[in-house]
Image 1 (tube, rainbow, N blue to C red):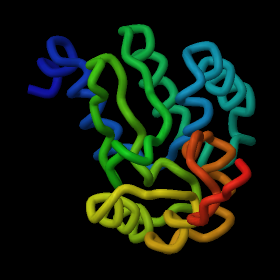
Image 2: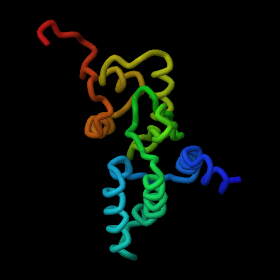
Image 3: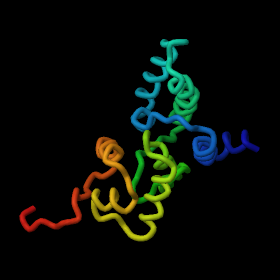
Image 4: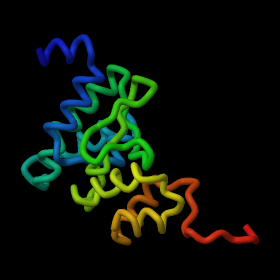
Length: 163
């Protein structure tokens, strides 16, 4: 059955595989496209036994990611309005998977669930709102900013008359 999905419904196969089987992610690399993934994969292979444990476990995931990209399926960055806490979501275009919040290094399962729960109660109005309602620490907020997860969102809940 699994092989049937891999051949006939690949987007569902990859969504399930990455949601259930994978624990280590390099979200920046995996969203950057085939060439970036191949480069990282080659770096890990070249390191051989000197590769860190996380890198060694990432190697298989990168290999599957390259296969996925070759089949026309890609990853999209975490989306504050769409991402699940732990499962990959098939985007509306049917050709990409949206990373879950757990794909972000340093973001625990409880915080990931809290973000989704708070989002369901009402849309986030600012970065400060995300931090307060979902109890996201400042280090993780900075990582999320670096990954452009908050693009277009104001920093504070307060409105400015002069902006």
